[in-house]
Image (cartoon, rainbow, N blue to C red):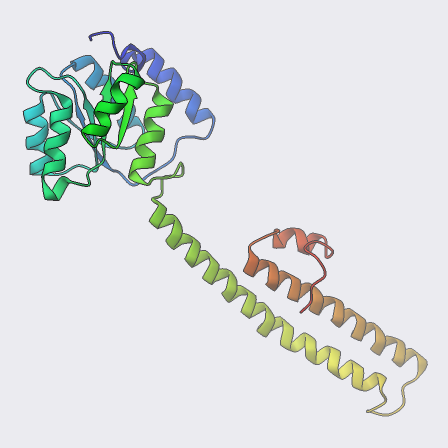
Amino acid sequence: MSNACIAVHDPAIVFSWRLAKREEGYQVEKQQRRILVVDDNAADVKGLELVLRLDRYEVLTAGSGAGALDAVRASPPDLVLLVDTLADMSGYDVCRGIRAAEETRALPVVMMTTWSMDEARPKCRAARADGCITKPIDLNELLALVRDLLGVSDYGETLEEQRTALIRLTAQRHGVARALNNEFGTPINAVIGFSELLLEGKAGPLTATQEDYARAIHEGGQRLLSLVLRCADLLKRGEPSVARVLADPQEGGTNTS
């Protein structure tokens, strides 16, 4: 088993992989979560600990099944990475022990195995593990599985944090839309209305030049009101970009309601 995880604990491979991910813009700040790594192979533990710490997780370790159960009981982590074969007991028995306690029954557990997935999957299901991954560990697969079980996005936010941020952003967009209607729409409507009164002769007859000016004001006001209403509508919907509409007044349709 000493060479089972060479793809993870080889420092040169880990460094090259992480550097490539940073160049892709992968490196992000995330809320730190606690992961317990349970394995009696020191090299494998070291490799996993390095990768997980680089990805901003707090890492705890245990080298035996009994030690893992003690650690989970003392201070439950957010997730357990558990090898299936330990010197003192089966990893599947450790998983069953975690499931047996009320306070850790829902704790995410990922089994790590040297068996093929077809052989390991039934055992993982029987032990009620949440996931199963084979050695040598594929780093992308491991981190994707961890993020999925912890409900963490690639941008370092939990799904609940994303939902809260989306609600807040939507409320802000609607607030700006209302401000556009009130602070811009009201005075623009006044310009349009008074120019209409002038064109209707309510303030007395206009010269040809004055009538041209009044008509230009009226048409300009209507175009400006249309743009404001489109921007307000797009802010509420979130797309397309309001900046693009300002650059091209035809962007986003012609709805002025």
